[in-house]
Length: 110
Length: 113
Image (cartoon, rainbow over all chains, first blue to last red; front, side, top):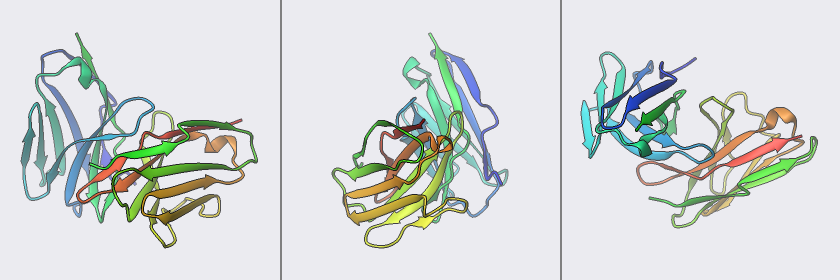
């Protein structure tokens, strides 16, 4: 029962361009959505979040969009930088529990 | 945010032995901590929710007698993998529930030979 799907296991983007990571979910009870970034052999670090009552949240180079009717969210990174290369997890939250997607490995090419 | 440490960062043990992993919240009194497991090229899977002073709540499919969790203080939770087997080899990550979000430790790589 996959409640969260990140259909692109990997994404390669040129430095300076926009990176768009997508996520679909099935549980309409999720009330908060987070994106975590993870480097190999490290724990995830929080990146940005959005409440279910909003459709957009922006923080510097990072913007998250939420389409509740489509149960879809996306993370935009612009401009992309080499340090952004990592695995990104889409993480809906319900009842204080986080449900991790499969992750998308983003590689930023110089 | 909360600073979370784990010890050890990596451990190799023989099949049949037990291994204890510590998770410490260094600057935040954590009533609730979580334990996750991540197999190679897979996502993080929640194993259990640990509440200070009470029994942990395990997710479906996680054996509570095999993965012993103790959360005796507001700054320390431990996960003991008992009678470890090679299939228990994984990356174990703890997190602390802060005011608004979870803060993750750096993880512990367990290899069972």
